Image (cartoon, rainbow, N blue to C red; front, side):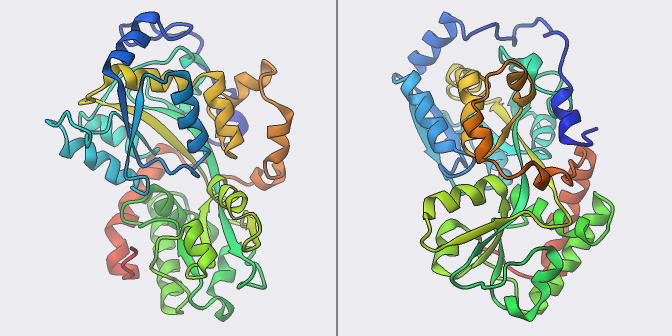
Length: 368
């Protein structure tokens, strides 16, 4: 059970179980050569301003220039990624993803449906037990907390908590950063709103979150548009609920035009873990394994921090003195994370089921 960040980061595996899926120390020369022969890696749903993915992808290409990176649908949600594997089981062409990066609930789902293959990276023992599959089918890589990003040219009074967004002052201004029927980020945004009402994490908070969004929609404050940095800047969605690392990245990209403010709400502070996995039908399985080795290397994990994300190996790297202080100084104050709640996998699953099944009937806003 994940109860708080400190506990999550302190849990590590004592040993790495020896098997054919274990990678040792550094990527082997054989793996690197096999990946280079494949010559391509196909990713999906990796926006460059999400958690610093642009720099991560560039770093991989710089290290392995013989491997081209084919990027599919950067704006897809977690459910879309799972469906892309299903739809391309017999397709070895460029539309078949090799790897996925999905919300915590989607990892076990993909494993249960036989869509993933196991692989344990060389730094496997430094990934907390609570955020990885023991057999290596999926593994947590980074986390963030839900936040509000606000266009200050349009919104003069920044909302401090979820209840504020029901006020008439925010008519036609509030959006989610995804479709809550498919996007993990949006699904957990609904959970956060439910937690803020005092509901228990899981189905109860999911249903409470739906009622909250129904009220916001009825009040005319909810905008059924997927919020992004562009819609925020244009003013069509001047308040967006998004992971803190996305919001802070957008703030950097916008560079004051317009001025924006990023706040972590006073209640319903929800933390979300994202996990990696390799498709069981990957056209480039060796390139996929090499990609995972890079993501969980010191270089890859440090790149997450540069993108305002907390990496899975944070505790081990911090203990070893591998984290630059300059990166830590760029993160929001530690106090912003003190109230963060890490839902269990069971709670995430129950919330996901409630939100995806009930959004249309309870809220009735067709987010596009």
